Amino acid sequence: MSPQQETDLPPGLSKPAQRALTNAGYRWLEQLTRVSEAEVERLHGVGPKALAQLRHALVANGLSFADGKKVDQSGTRE
Image (cartoon, rainbow, N blue to C red; front, side, top):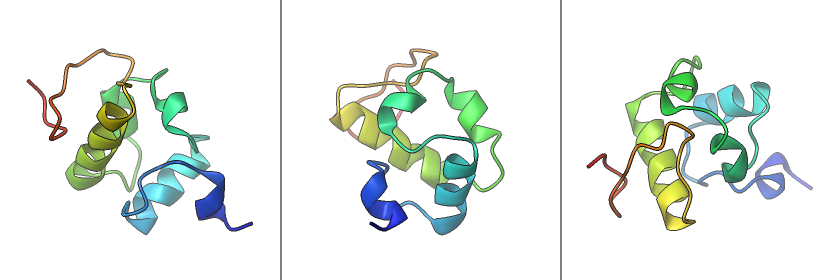
C-alpha cells in the first residue's frame, strides 16, 4: 500500500506539506483536530495554500483545528 492510500489528507497537498505532516505524525484529518492551526503552520513545508486545503478538508468532514477557528465551506476563516 502506498503512503497516499494510508492517509485521508487532501490528495492535492504538496509533497513538502505531505512530508511535513507525516514526519510530525499527522496522517489523518482527525489527528489535526488535536492541534491548533498555528502549530501546523509552523511545520516546515506547510504554507498558506496547504493550510487552506487542510481547512477545506476538515470542514468537508465536519472537523476543525483544535483552536476552534470557525471556517466557512470555502475553507476560509469567518
